[in-house]
Length: 151
Image 1 (tube, one colour):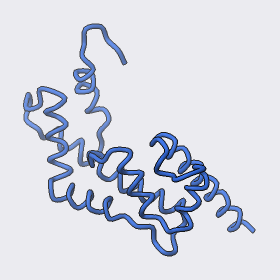
Image 2: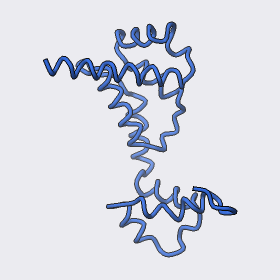
Image 3: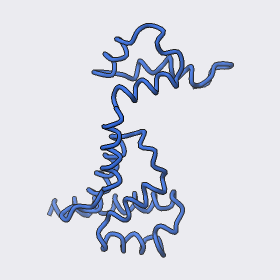
Image 4: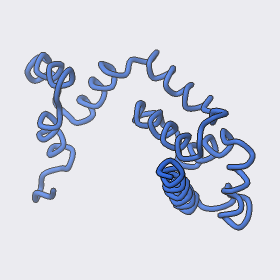
């Protein structure tokens, strides 16, 4: 949404309350009037309320220590990894760091599959290319798993 001479941060600040529900909506309604003047004020207060430093540290550690489980498919591992990233939207990890963490957390067979799909070492590709390969492989593996279950 673009409005002439109105900064996008002001528009986000005005529209943000309409995106909330539950505990987040109650929290914002309890904030004193005029206590939030800018988008940065809002972001800071929101993160401090719903992601205190200890929670953020724990979530970041979970992401960093991620490992594919013994009985977990490639698709399931990718979904679980993304769930962890969504649980901590301010994790601060670059896309390259995320891809490196995920790749190194996989079992050898799945790493080999990614390398094969990349035509070389998977991590030598650009992050966008890596993401496309993972998404494609994940969809294929998920559809195969569904076909096996359906038989």
